[in-house]
Image 1: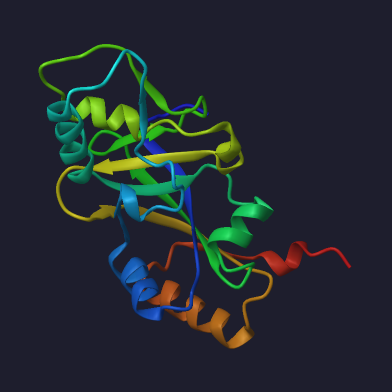
Image 2 (image 1 turned 180 degrees about the vertical axis):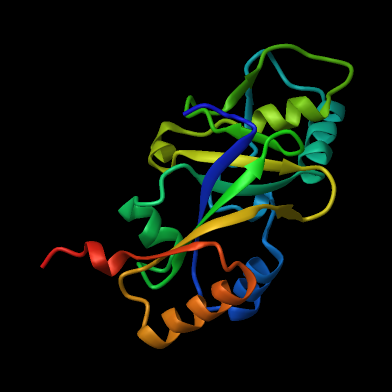
Length: 199
């Protein structure tokens, strides 16, 4: 997987909160969260092994991390654990969208554990915070996560290309999703994953 100008990535979502889904489809944008709102309790942590890191640097890094918003995406639209954890157990959808890497900061997650800081420094930068937020434990590798990082605003603009509808989405809800997509994104592909079900 290589980052090009246009990057097709996927967002797993519940459809229980229709207000948010309508916003995503009608405005073609995704919400970006602060790091401490994400579900990994180790998110944003780092390791320092050479004595005690100066409190000033600890506070500076914390401040930097808090200014960054994260939109978490996957390069895999068909992972069963992802459907279970993030799309309400196939009662949700997966949104496939293109993101412009010329104007967005998109980075693949590296699953090599938390970042180690090896030296005391007088200053820290946004890049230091981004580096910390781009590494996770190998336990999360199945997510095949890419992150869009924002330092301003809270929404990531995208071009929605396809919607995958979960196997357990009721027909009435599926029809509502289809109506929204056909109204606001008439060129988008809609795929019902029930068609792939094994009996």
